[in-house]
Amino acid sequence: MTCSIKSRVLWCVVGFFILTSLGCGGAYVSGKVTFDDGTPLTVGTVCFETDKEQMIGHIKNDGTYELSPNDRNKRIPKGLYKVCVTNAVVEVGNELRASGNRADFGGRRMTKSIIDKKFESASSSGLTCDVKGTTVYDITVTKAN
Image 1 (cartoon, rainbow, N blue to C red):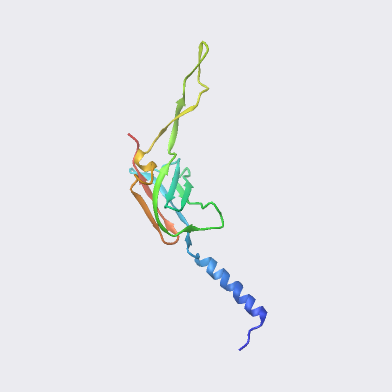
Image 2 (image 1 turned 90 degrees about the vertical axis):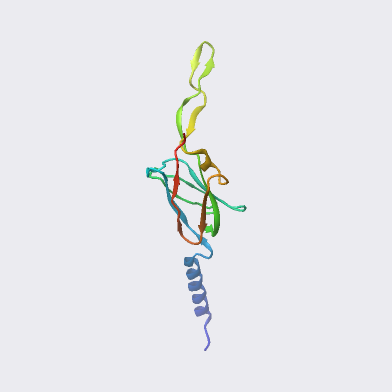
């Protein structure tokens, strides 16, 4: 049985699309971040870290996130990740700055974290996720004291 060049090219194209749709070793990761009382965390960033990789996803108003590799054409590499939640802060006012004879509130914004500090570092959060394929990883955090 002989194959024409056109049929070989066609099979190569079909094979490429099959391999691409299967994932080729990568994954997508998404989830929801909530407090232990079930309410969503509506600000911040979720970080997945290994010794070689760091992936981040911004938390949306409903508490959901999706991880985004630097190159949008790539998927998240499979493997075990340490997880943290950062930048979960709210504004509490402006720093009072002396300006001549009057008070000036034009200083830097003052913020405070609304989650327990342990979640801000992958080494102290206690959170891990084993990414094996398309993964949904929900995270529960506790409020700051």
